[in-house]
Image (cartoon, rainbow, N blue to C red; front, side, top):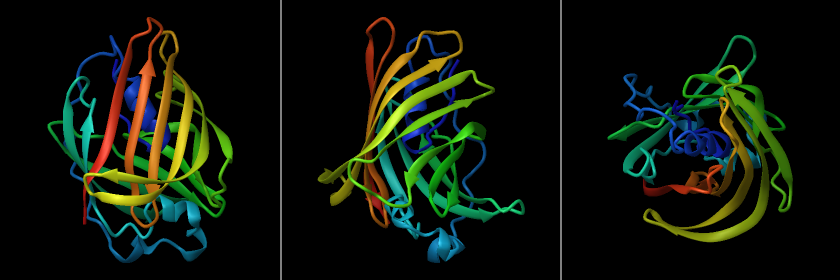
Length: 235
């Protein structure tokens, strides 16, 4: 069984976890095109704008094209990400990252925006329960927090810890940037399978978002595989 998800650190790790050996059939391209992007900050209320949201790319007026290796498994793809925002009637403010890819499309990532941080609530249309913290409002080197959530009624369970490790110059195909670095370690369990160990690292640039993500996974047999996402164009 394979689940297509890519929700920041959480779902990006889940994507790698679900690409493990014997995970199931290859993903198929999405049949739903990403919605049009609204410029000028997407209309996000000012009280929801904080350092964490800026690190994730606020005002979200750019599209990012990534080279992705390891998706599909043992293959590569090109993915272009854009953002949309919706203030729902229930008071929830939802930011969604949408992808358009070739030959396969990464699924969407949805976040609830709060004054104290950004929380992952859905990946590829599947609800994450409970929601997980993707980024705190205040970015402090050394801070860490648990990231525990499940998808598809508990069929996929993730138990990791995220830590802000510092700032670092990172060079990707799109250029050189001063980035905030987050690492994530823990396990993913799919159905009745043994847990898979995951180790992830992400580089976030204020006003742009993630310019690079890497993750390594090791299954119960010791087999290791890798997934990398690197920005090649930012417009």
